[in-house]
Image 1 (cartoon, rainbow, N blue to C red):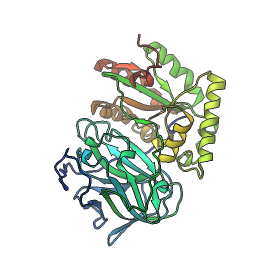
Image 2 (cartoon, helix red, strand yellow):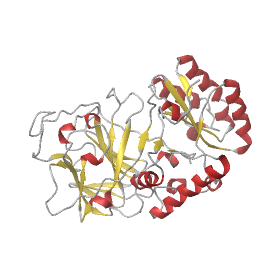
Image 3 (spheres, rainbow, N blue to C red):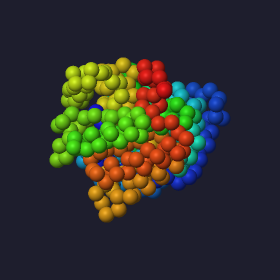
Image 4 (cartoon, rainbow, N blue to C red):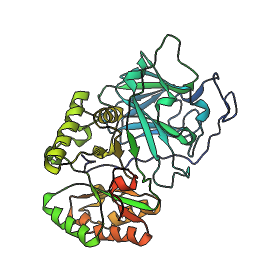
Length: 389
């Protein structure tokens, strides 16, 4: 299972500003009741109520009104983010609070809470470092959504933004308010937190680097394997079923955009069965198509595989953009840029000979840095991974 060819980089275009919160108490002090922390009421296309960046990306049609934002998604890869700050915001004082979102229209989407990197620096990769997600419809009551902040498994001391994405319908949704409140109305119950696995864009093991090689063309496979043997390095291949290699397919909707959770389960189980039948292995590592992973996909994977990892990346060779172009050398430049920013999990493909021609260059770049190249499970310090040699 893999992130598929054609991914377009998502970018947070945020101003470098830090928000210090002091609503009802100083940070770190216990708080049970306080005035709502209003994050966004959509009165400006440029900034939210905190004076920090918010906006859509990936071409999502959006229309601001007087105190509203109407989103008209056409696929699950589109998203909207509203930031708490350009750096880290310590939200631990609100660990027992609730995220309240007021909407009109569909609730068939994902709400995510992002965690900044340890440097709290958006110029360091990865940015954001990780995030956790919930399915909005599980928490919705009419036009109100109340999610306990404790249902987002992130470090609240490094909170960065709230995201809306993973739309699995083309119905519109209008957002009116995003805020943090001490509690929902007494008449509302709260659903249980469903497991969502661990989303990783960064290695845990110090001084490590992992190459994640996704789908490719069969005629190039032996060339890549010979190169890996000559370089004497280990990489991780994220494989896909034959049907996913059809470039005419709408890969964006392969997972999160599927209409039902049963469809998602079928995609997982069929691929896992192929793994077992053909390779004799069972894996708890998954790389989603396009890197697009919403709450439903994460929940279903966690229901089918104990303690799973969803592996995205912090180094992109950008073969989806430059392979076969008049400037293929920009693939190496893109890899080097992300690597020098601190990225240590790569995404690459062997779909085009111009990409393969830069494999040795990027292998040597990482080797010369002193970082140790290893499998993804080894860089994640997985106890079940083979020991390092």
